[in-house]
Amino acid sequence: MNWTCVQIEERLSDFLDGLLPESERREFQAHVDSCSNCAPLLAQVTHVVNRLRAIEEEQPPAALVSKILDQTLGPRKPERNWLGWIPLLWQPRFATGLVTVLATILIVFHAIGVSPSNVTAANLNPVNLYHSADRRAHLVFARSVKFVNDLRIVYEIQSRLQPASGPAPNQQAPSATPAQPEPKSPRQSQGSSASGNFALVAVALADGPGGSFR
Amino acid sequence: MEPDAQLVQRCLRGEGPAWEELVRRHTRRVFNLCYRFTGNSTEAEDLSQEVFLRIYRTLASYRTAYGGFPTWLTSVTRNLLVDHYRRTRRDRVTDALDDVMPKVEEKHSPVRTPDKAAMARELSEQVQHGLSRLSPELREAIILRDLQGLEYNEIQEVLSVPEGTVKSRINRGRIELARILQEMGVRPD
Image (spheres, each protein chain N blue to C red):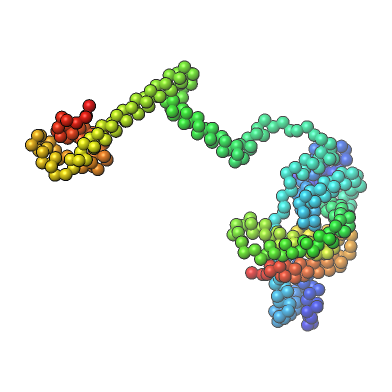
């Protein structure tokens, strides 16, 4: 039997659902293979059916079951679940808040000198916390004062070395203290450590007693 | 898992937990049927509630001889959807023209996210739009067969029409939907 295009269209779903007997299936396929109208139609319908079957089910709204049960069984008592708040912590707004609070606590503990790895009940005593914070504040203040004083020394030395960066002071210096090492350039001394500062002080002293160095 | 028929018997004896189990088990199916038919999530939610309210009131009329509980549930849902369709037909006629244009533009959008979820969403929307352009008879046949995966005899029971009519509607529905999606630019890869 030779199939017509109309017959092909009528039996398309039977073919796709595997409801055609084997002999008819072969005839159907033979027609489609040789027909420029039916081949694209079969391809498109097959594609659509595959797409339909690939679609995932929609998730119903979370409250739908409760609404149905409320309408049919009447309002029910809310379930008591003591651990029900835990999933809330994973919500971004709560998680961000929690992380911020923890970070703040860590910073405050660090500032007052309590190590998070070594927290004891005595450490958390308000009196001890106050003393610890007071001590830390004084330490920080003392370090700041020392740092500022060091800076003053360095700048004074630099200001004294600046006009002497030419050849003249270099010629004077060896005569005063021939054993002194070569003075460093201001740029080098700026980048040096505290021990380097002492070397600069020595050079400044060698430069002459007329400076304002104290 | 306890069979549906047994749960129904427990419901009829007034056991609330049995009804709750029945609702939890079938809400997704009913919601999806309503959603695919109406294409609107809010409407589908309202209709799903109506379906279960009707089921709750008529549960005593269910007999296992009618077929499985899901088939009966689908049948009740389908009848309610048809009622709803008739009720809202007038509103839809005025909306129909406005509805076509923006949806057709969506397919030309050059922005295609390679993300799998986004592609699935796009596919779902295209098919949903295609379905909404089918006549209700063809649409319900396609939804029951290709989206809900019902067998021909089950669809026959749900729609209360002869098997030949079911086959014819499914076939015409698929061809019609294929043409609509082709117009929208959906073609085999």
